[in-house]
Length: 226
Length: 86
Figure 1 (cartoon, each protein chain N blue to C red):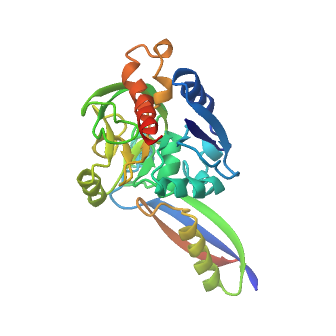
Figure 2: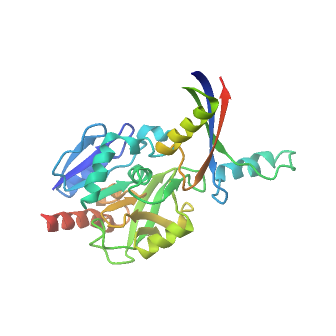
Figure 3: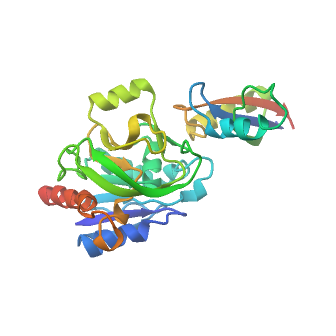
């Protein structure tokens, strides 16, 4: 199970993601530098968190113009599972692969804390092992995590079941408490919280099982494809 | 051909909250003696220097660059583009 972990200048959660994919879930991840073509025969791609290009101009926008994103778009069209976490989510939004935009948190603070998500869509490659409305204790760590969509797009997201995760309370001012969304086909998922920081009991003081299900869902999906 | 300065001002669309502007207003300006200030909006400005035939073409070229490279996010932001002789 080959998973590409895309690395941009300023990514800083790539190693955590690599560790979890390989050591915890026994997949075969590989780092993919942003200005090289994406390797062929990948089963999934993860865009990890960090501060690509130092968040200059706007979080994610410069990375969204990296050569590798053209390849990510191509495999997204083929239905390959793609997960963007935190800055990875911002990049997916800025590249047009996901709707909406991520703005500065209402508090203007960099927020680093545990939140609770609820699963709103359990049909994606990253949520297929969850029950609907299942809770996930999971940390956020961002300054620009306030998901925003206009009212019309919000209705469309609801109608097409593209809201994947919501916070169970007001966290940062996100539209409708949205924490993660998917594309219309459901194979591209972006989320602000960090599942790679919650999927092991050693680093999760609450319950690591729900976050583990994000990776186990991927295993199930890839296993079903192969 | 000549050099032109082109200023690109990126700001939130009306209705998109601007917590930084509100903080500057409520926690700095209104805590002083400037009670006649009713609103502050923050914006980001990029200053381009560009070589073009005319000021108008300098302005339209910069607009094109801003649209093509998503210098601003049209979902939440508007841009104002002003061109000047260098």
